[in-house]
Length: 212
Ligand SMILES: O=P(O)(O)OC[C@H]1O[C@H](OP(=O)(O)OP(=O)(O)O)[C@H](O)[C@@H]1O
Ligand SMILES: O=c1cc[nH]c(=O)[nH]1
Ligand SMILES: [Mg+2]
Image (cartoon, rainbow, N blue to C red; front, side):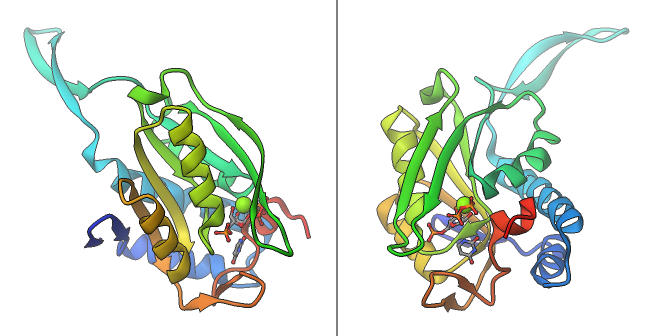
């Protein structure tokens, strides 16, 4: 993992390998969906390295001992609809008891501005570690808006996890929210005139859900 203050780009060969498979235009919906889940699980493992622990007393069949467990309220996983939904299964396979919130948002095709249409978060969001997930961090507009919503609803400990990011999006998000950790599978070269990441993988939502 390449650490750069609050931006981490993963370097695990499995993540890199699977992202390359994801990019391939011949990768069909079923395979694409499975890869997004696998990548999300691998990224979740790395992202959750700093979960806080505490010791409690456990009685084994032989004796009583102190043992470490994860401290505090359950994790809150917040996918940005639609494409973020593709990442939830992989992370929930690691943390099955996590709570799940949702931020509904789409990018206006003309202005590229994010439009919010839904937001529901678990109770006690101020006491939870929050993973906001979306496969693509392009202009950063959607991510910036989503982090803002979560903060407005009391969220404090926020991490943003994406599979592919554009330099523009990383810059915008880290500038707008210097207090959050940003994780990416790859940082690509640039955005095209329609706000798509190059070389990228196309439209993540459409490829996950098979919609054109
Ligand atoms: O960084 P930005 O410039 O905001 O672009 C990134 C957003 O664009 C895509 O969503 P889209 O609006 O295509 O909706 P979808 O997820 O439903 O496909 C992608 O899933 C991100 O949410
Ligand atoms: O490349 C991109 C940019 C935004 N949204 C996507 O789904 N793909
Ligand atoms: Mg989206």
